[in-house]
Image (cartoon, rainbow, N blue to C red; front, side):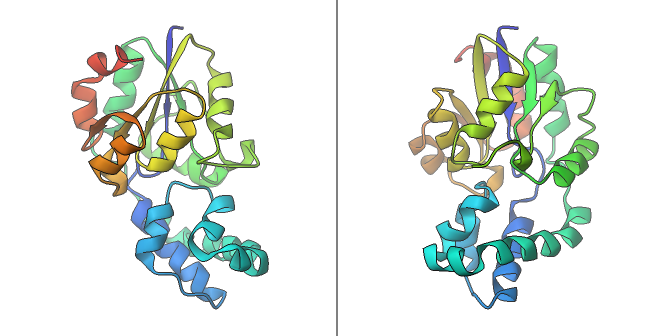
Length: 217
């Protein structure tokens, strides 16, 4: 297989970033820490192993990190029923396969969340594989998760698809180009500054130009 697409899930294929931001805000509050939601949103796309220190500092991570992550796991549960696929997401995945590419859903989400999203997207019979936070010790912006995803479908070339600067940074560390969507709340300028080769509004607009995009790899 010549090309494999490594697609992020949260914020890229399912509309979940703002739900996660509120869940993290409540989790911090459960542990006696208040972090502005705007700051949390800017870190969505990082794994929980990275996010606590990134938004609240080393001391909070040392004193409360595991408790905050445990609280987040409880706070996010009610939101799962409200998370929906982004318009055109499944059609985009189908188009990736129609054009002869491999497809791995390179998620750093909890395994049960990834399983839920696979069902929401109807992607179990489309994707060649998927990942979760359990596959690595360090999640995005570390490149480890994308490395695991690459090993699931060996190919000569790879293209990452994400919605955050953290996706771009992780892929860049492996020399993989990233196409970014604005669906996670990051602006076009900052995604391009993080070395996204193309930026689109949503999955549908990317699907319309996917053949041309694959020629960039």
